[in-house]
Image: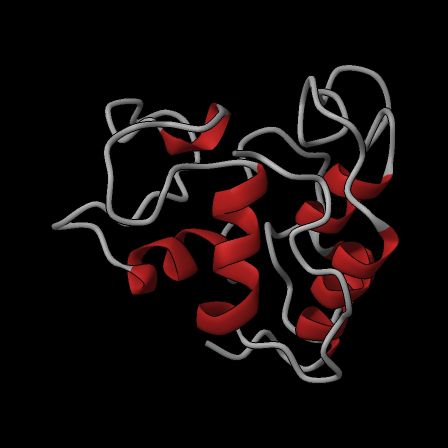
Length: 135
């Protein structure tokens, strides 16, 4: 079931595999080994959408590659989906912390249609990005 607080206490040094990916899958995507979606970013059949599912043959490394140092399709210039070491230019942080990230025309706060993520989860994402987004 989706949650808005998948990380109740932010680790000082989160990793993608242990902390960030499970939080994305709980809040925004699919169960890790199932094609059943729990919300928007879990449908493995939607190639134009960022997908957090790890249904074979898709792996956690594929999801990581789709996020880290990747240019978003729906952001103002100057952002990467995740800019390692640079939370101010990481689109994922703008999307989970702002009601109109990037201003009008770039979509709504995520997770869409659900309560905002808790402060601890947001801090975990920030810590991960500041730490250079380790896998």
